Length: 363
Ligand code: BGC
Image (tube, rainbow, N blue to C red; front, side, top):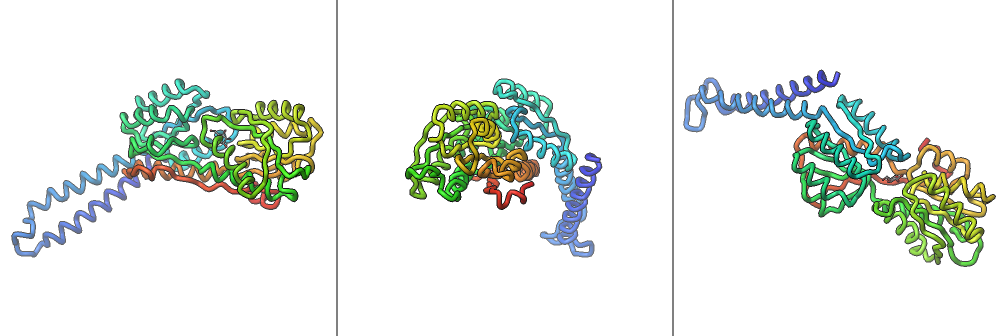
């Protein structure tokens, strides 16, 4: 199926190219044209055809080279990245690629070995969700040495780091946008998050992995949206929950027993931690949207259900399917020979606010 498609594509390119080449040589050397200095003599038409064939072969090789794709995910045990990797696999396999997906098990050394193995296997392109953003320099140097077109996803390196290799792009979202949207979800509530009317919004922040720019920006910009709107804020606690549901549950439990009714808003950098926090909120006898607000990011199915049921104030769609589509499109452009100028190596997909009013659109 796959090879048939590739062969058909290669044949089509070959035909198109040789038609172009024939057209040109016919134009330059019309059969009846008298031999002038400009017009190539008949026997010199052969190199032009050869060149066309060579070019066509190159295209055929390029198309056929799109075959084997290696994907490295930072860890399989991550709710959002599970949706994302499934989308990637489905899109790529649907297009006829052979796909191998590896679990980095949250261990950068493990992932480095996986990248090296893919290089030894001569995969045609790599899609990498780094375990540690701080490993970006080394990952980029490795794929550059091997000359493998690479799409980095989900954990964004700096523009300077990416500038080292022009066959590399990053596909993700601008996490500042999701943070701002979380703040707006709170501002859109009837009391703008100030449930007890004391003039300030008292919140706890359950953060993802703080090494990750998504965690940093969501933490900063959710609160910034409140202060930009002129609200006073009080941070009761900020804890790292590493994107993990159980940690979200534990942090919320501890904070709820420590701060009790003082907590008006629970900000979670992602939905999985928000689902965990919700368990503790309910166990503490609190009611979301009545005496406490709760927001996440991702729009996981479980979170959409809770938003619909009124157990989460809202979430923000982190578009796994849209990002997977964009990553595959970028990968195919790289395979087609496109290179990226420094400063133009980040491709962003928009976040979308999800509230009880529009949750139906996302289910
Ligand atoms: C998602 C998290 C996920 C993390 C993994 C974030 O963009 O919102 O749910 O755990 O990426 O790096």
